[in-house]
Amino acid sequence: MPKLVKDGAIIENDWTLMAKPDGEPAEASVPEGKVIVPLKVWQAQKDTLKSRDSLGVWLDTDETADELGEEAREFPLVAVNFPAFADGRAFTTARMIRERYGFEGELRAVGYFLAEQANYLRRCGVNALDFGEDRQQHLEAAVEALNDFTEYYQSSVDQPLPLFRRRA
Image (cartoon, rainbow, N blue to C red; front, top):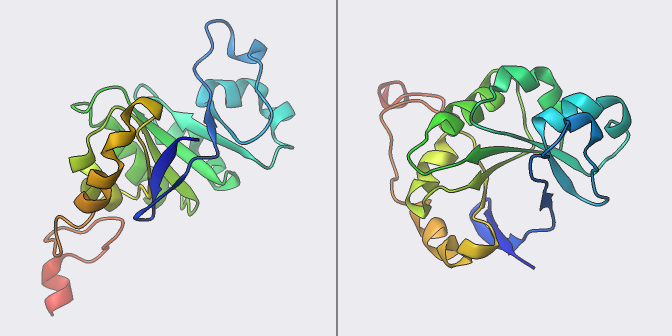
């Protein structure tokens, strides 16, 4: 079973990330078990899927936190996708889900991001890093990167007060 980094520890990944369907989202078959569905599938099949306890949703970079909105609180897991490590839109999406919509569950980064970005992802509210089955070698480096910095000037999800306020 593949692993991921969650809350600073390497653990088993018992969730399945469902790919975007080729056809209509309303006609996509959602497998049983712990599944993270694309936002469009959730929106199209909401009435049917609401009864499932073990369901998460993921947002792609062309989707905003506003499209999920307050519904984020209904899920145990929300994931944000990184199609490339240089695409930072998911950082903003993660922060908005935490701060604007009050999501308190697992916020997972999926896709192609770097282990060196782990600390910055945590500052935006991400507490789980899923590198995928083919990039498991990055897990240890991500855990180490979570401790790259011990103090920050700016406020963030994990430290709401800027440094000058904490020193006052």
